[in-house]
Length: 348
Ligand code: B12
Ligand code: SF4
Ligand code: SF4
Image (cartoon, rainbow, N blue to C red; front, top):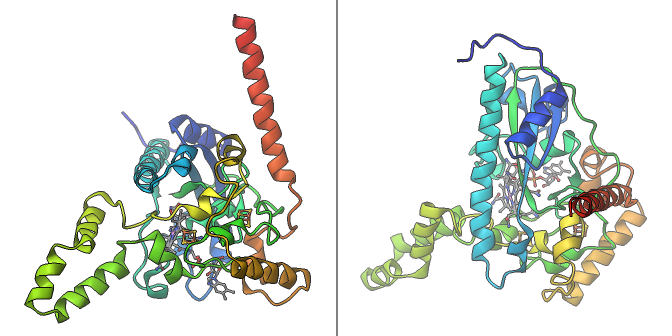
């Protein structure tokens, strides 16, 4: 029976609990820092907009199993996306309850929903990518996914907002993304939506949310204008079925396109499971290659790139790419494997 008496908590104890509950990665961001550095100051996605009492945000990551990126069809990745998000919310909720039992009021932010009042509902209540970056877990790729050295962009993440002040992690200074010279996400993107550390959201949404909000409202508008025969036809269409399936199972209404996640060479999981299968990029075109080259030249010539502005570079990695972070994680993974194999050999 909890007595809600305030117990002192260390950042380490909270992180250990998150990992014990099933998080793949965990970091801590200071609410004060998040309030001071909103991603877009005109539309502040900050904890203080939600609650004035929040002191720290514990950020947890749940990775997407690599196998789904080796499939011949999209349904496995869409289905796993939905299940992983639910699992992540459960882990986060359990951590929030544990924090409350320790005397520190805490709650979980909405990780997928968007705020109608901000940028035509294209913004979340908080930007969970920015939370992850401030919590030291990784930083932006060219396609503005957060890349971690462990899983590249193949992950979902959320935040537990808590009233206890915990020691925050430092954001990574090194850029995790290989950079414009790689541009594999750009080459693979079916919507040609990848910008220079930026994303064209409507172009992406056509593929990432086949039966998302825009598809549904467009269908309703067509239906309202249609004559009786067309209406009958529409009621038997794949569009309506997709809409129903999206509401019922979320499949089709988000997370439909896996391409920028699948081809990114950052992450131990990529090298272990995806490098052979994803080496060739069928969607590559001369125009996309030229776009990547243009980005590379712009960076080299210190051109004015909004995604790399003085404000935004904080989330890209101000020191640029050196490959050190990835190497460290790969070495730690190899050491762990070697230790496991040695222990197994001793047991036999
Ligand atoms: C809305 C949304 C989308 C929508 C947008 C819909 C629409 N029509 O508007 C779309 C369909 C694009 C989308 C797509 C995807 N999404 Co999404 N999405 C979100 C959501 C819910 C909110 C996004 C948000 O608030 N971003 C924050 C703002 C600041 O980012 P932004 O608008 O992109 O702004 C950037 C630039 O535009 C620019 N910028 C913005 N304003 C300004 C102002 C100035 C002055 C300047 C210079 C620049 C600038 O800088 C920003 C940072 O680079 C988040 C969850 C969350 N609460 O964060 C998930 C989230 C970002 N999505 C996620 C995923 C996985 C995806 C997809 C991979 C889907 C899929 N296939 O599975 C794709 C990836 C596309 C991509 N490369 O970014 C994950 C990201 C995981 C990761 N590794 O990064 C998130 C975090 C969900 C989660 N809980 O984990 N998504
Ligand atoms: S999710 Fe698909 S359409 Fe959107 S940016 Fe990634 S590759 Fe492009
Ligand atoms: S595919 Fe290459 S350019 Fe794109 S995010 Fe990954 S490392 Fe960066």
